[in-house]
Amino acid sequence: MKRTLAALFLTLLLCSCGAPREPESVQFFAMDTLMTITCTEEDLDAVHHAMREIARLDALLSRTREESAVSALNRGETVEDAELAALLTRAAKLCKATGGAFDVTVAPVVSAWGFTADEYRVPTQEEITALLTHVGAGGIGSDGEVTTLAEGVSVDLGGIGKGYASDCAARVFKEENVSGALAALGGNIYAHGTKSDGSPWRVAVRDPFDGSAYVGALSLTDAFAVTSGGYERYFESGGKTYHHIIDPATGYPAESGLASVTVVCGEGLLADALSTALYVMGEAKAIEFYRTFEEPFDMILVTQDGRVVLTEGAAALWDTSVAEHSYQYETINKL
Amino acid sequence: MKPSISCKFNRFDLLLSLFVVLAAAALALFFLSHAGGEAGEVSIRDGDNAPYSLTLDAPRRVQLADGHITLVIERGGVYVEYADCPTQDCVRTGKITRTGESIVCLPNRVVVTLEGAGEFDAVTG
Image 1 (tube, chains in turn blue, brown):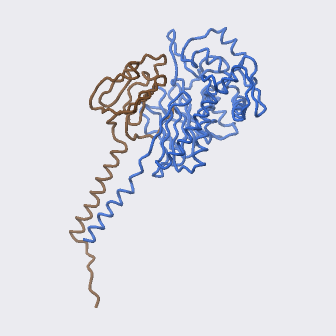
Image 2 (tube, rainbow over the protein chains, first blue to last red):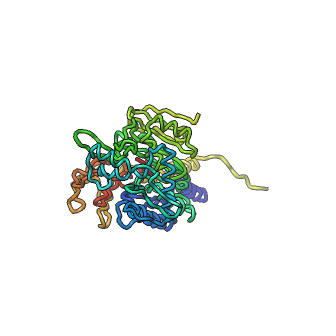
Image 3 (cartoon, rainbow over the protein chains, first blue to last red):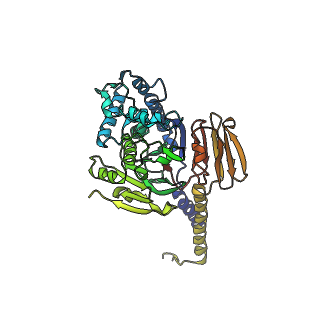
């Protein structure tokens, strides 16, 4: 009898070891996208705190909400807000570091293509040329508290807003001792800690040529991952496709030979900005940037000719077995 | 004199061991099938209405967002057949078939998700 009870106990023990706690998911709309945060039940309060923080940022940074600080800036007003000043100063530095491939002042050109109001159109060359005279981070003036924009300049923080929001979520999770959570802010991913079973978070990278397939998956712990690709938002006109990632140098959708860029690093804002910048740069310049940029990051480039180029750090986190289509994988290092 | 204790592995021990292994395997299979199996339901969040779920076993068309979106539910997946918004993002998403995948219509605040834990915790891109 004792042996039977011991056996039953052992059976239950064996099974309970492998049964992880059911995760909770919180979904909400903010920053013009759907956001999902996954966590354990005991961390729900912290997740709601992070949600409130993201809503606050949405009200501050939105370009389409008239009452936001960014809208006030774009109307030509002087805005006193230390957080916004710091964000724009960082955006200007990243603009310089990327040779202008990432530029928040490309906003008027993006609007001319209709991507701000979802009213797509192809602007004339004259219109683009005129608008490009107002593009450049030199148009942002800030003393660390007060920010002003030069005449005709406007900014759109859509290229770093969700990344910055994921940084703020990370801060909240850390302050409130969250053991593990996964924030998916419209494709901007922050993997905090591990899953409840101790394993890393599994994040698939969408195949830019097939929306229902993946090019691979990343195993992430305490890391941010952001993907940019022209396939995410586009329209067709006159038999041609125009996507939403505008090259600040030309005013036209970037045609760099890349289909998508995923950046993995320790800061959401940086991952967000670099994924756009590297997409605009193209493969050769992106690799050169990876080898020379002072801040560490990893990247996965999917090229239009069907190759997947990974930095060595990304390759260490990468699983190709989930890819449904044939790709040629190449790994590069810092040299 | 101490009583002698037999440590011989008898037929009862063998049956008991088999029972433990089989029972553990059956329970593990139960948990695994609930953590990554095929989607059986689709959850629908339609604006401010209370979210609800529908089974994939009964093919049907569902009108969402007061008729602005037509969702087709069929065995193995769901897709948006029609939407009258300018971006057509939800139509372009195509048919979703894996648990955890979603179709999102931002203008109408509609989220359609295949229920269940999928192979991945999130998707970027």
